[in-house]
Length: 120
View 1 (cartoon, helix red, strand yellow):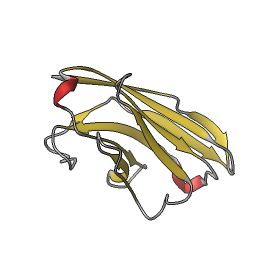
View 2 (cartoon, helix red, strand yellow; view 1 turned 135 degrees about the vertical axis):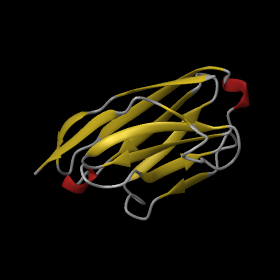
View 3 (cartoon, rainbow, N blue to C red; view 1 turned 45 degrees about the vertical axis):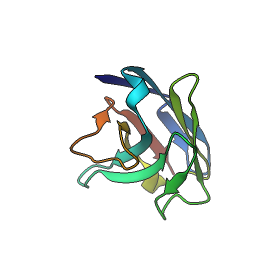
View 4 (tube, one colour; view 1 turned 60 degrees about the vertical axis):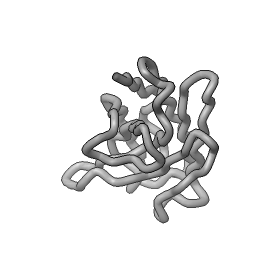
């Protein structure tokens, strides 16, 4: 089993920055892909960004150039640095981890989520 604990959410004004962290524990040796998803009220959960153990990253078009995902394998932690935040970035952000190179929502491990609210 893998446990994921997110931190760093909060209330920020539009145009500001925020960094989310996700610490993994448990059977972490088996984890390859880690990433962030988000779910806004009334919307489906959507991919934000993923990073593989080797450092390959992937981003949703809506966050490219504004968000940066990074990973510290020694600390078993993945980060999401968010800048130029927009009101439409408001959502609950979830950390996810998977044993293979692609995060499968039905197979992945999930954190409890952290609220990010962007005010205008």
